[in-house]
Image (cartoon, rainbow, N blue to C red; front, side, top):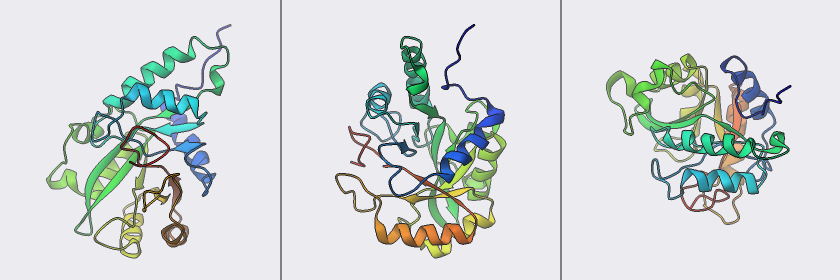
Amino acid sequence: MVTQTPLLISESSATSKLRKIFASVDAMSCPHRLNFHLHTVHSDGKMQAVDLIQQAIALRLSDLAITDHHAIGGYYVAKQYLDNFASQVNEPANLPTLWSGIEVNASLIFTEVHILGYGFDPKHGAMHPYLQGKTTAGLDYQAISVIKAIHSAGGLAVLAHPARYRRSPEDLIPAAAALGIDGVETYYGYDNSDPWKPSPKQTEEIRHLADIHGLMHTCGTDSHGFKISKRL
């Protein structure tokens, strides 16, 4: 009998598995257990996707997502490497699970924000406008359209770093919740500290707002450099 690895997750179970993971997120989850905000050379990061997934394996992460801007190529490269690696080790169940991910620019109450998508089918037609390596326009650029596209493709939508925009989290989080967003990036290091840690003041505010609106919490380092354990 062939033992299946945990690296390939069916579309029907992806959302429920992700919800369970996000339900467990707290201030200590990132960057040594989870990391759901990472960039590679396929958008504006400096790291090759293979180097990124090698670091994830070395850190013994349980779950992660590459969230390149309007691009999915890094995910495919990392996934192929991880699948090949899993076939050569004795205990593939101990390897990280790599989820599909994306970061999309969108307009929310006349403010440009970034929306993270997780666990979606990259080949679903609804995602096509957001995988072209550039910001969309018109109706595709509206937050409601981005959220609906991610949901149509079987994924979850999350408002990235809510305290980094022109408008406050008090404005943006309720607006995003009203459009059906699933969660917010509650744990984020706004001061780019090394070692990485979530900023306490913003975390407390954002977690409170997310809880009021019934939203899930995520975390990630937003790595753009050569180490996934910090931002720059």
